[in-house]
Image 1: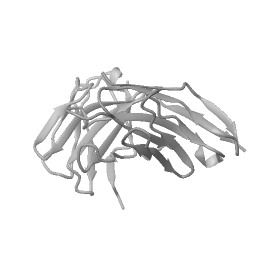
Image 2: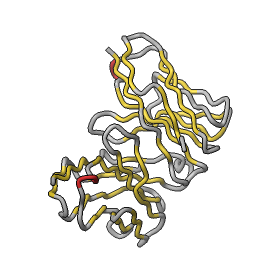
Image 3: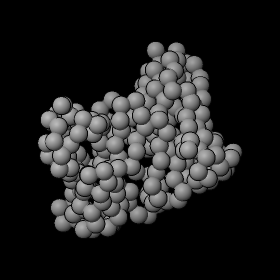
Image 4: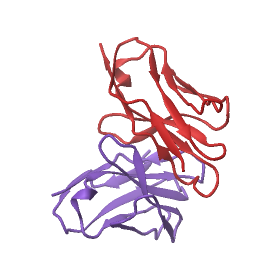
Length: 112
Length: 114
């Protein structure tokens, strides 16, 4: 009963370092998403994908990259970490547009 | 563009008190409306949803009615429990090209004390 799984749960990065947040879902969903949640704010969409091989920018894509080589996996890459990227990151998926979106448990990232 | 406004928190209630969390929205067309709940240290979970005007979503004793005339989707529960302590997010998804994503409010933190 895994649903959406993301790793790592916690990470501290130094300015300028790179890292990848991993996300996988076992529900055979077509749509996958990455959101970030800043303190006291709602979630903002970073990138999304409507299927393997297809990705597109959301509201706040700068500083991030994604890929979708399989239906199950949707990793998020931070190339040059900046303090402004300190946030909680949520991966999510849905079967199709308009369907219920299921979220992972979140990844807490601090850039110092 | 789309936007969601929900009441500022935090909200602190005693157990068995009545809960209302206000949510209003701005959107083009006829959006679907959602309430998500985030328990401490966890991801967001869908609590309830409504897809058209006058629909009532309900789950776990929570209810919300889609009011198009007032562009509102207020969350209510008649008798809260300590286990309801969480952050509650109102969200919308509007039809058309942007319906692949949700627009979220800022969240309302609820603390229920025994």
